[in-house]
Length: 165
Image 1 (spheres, rainbow, N blue to C red):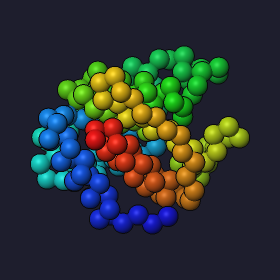
Image 2 (cartoon, rainbow, N blue to C red):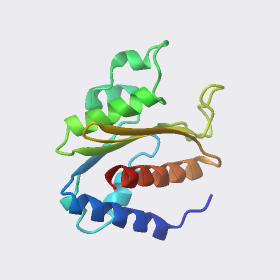
Image 3 (spheres, rainbow, N blue to C red):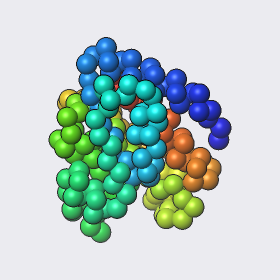
């Protein structure tokens, strides 16, 4: 999968323009992307005007401690880290623990290992939240670890743009 860096910069600039126009502050809650979304956002000069905090919560324990994702989500009968319930809780936690009113959360199986029949490698959940509006989507991205993470970055930016439009 090829997605040029210039396309990422363009999406980030569009998002920044919308956030500034609406006087909104945002935060990220990332698992499978390891901070790549926050890095892409803060690559834009002046991002401190609209970006507050990036949470990298790779472990289940970090999701619970930093984002207040309920512990039962990670128990055997819970939805698990890669689920709609978890990414929604992550956006809520990112908003609650920052000065943001907009948040994006991602959790997935980037590979090459870690997949299952229910959640194969490439499975990613993304949630975007602004006040009481929450958009979620499940993806099954193809490719190697880098391709899955890059596709997640792009999808997260598009989710945010659609949310604040």
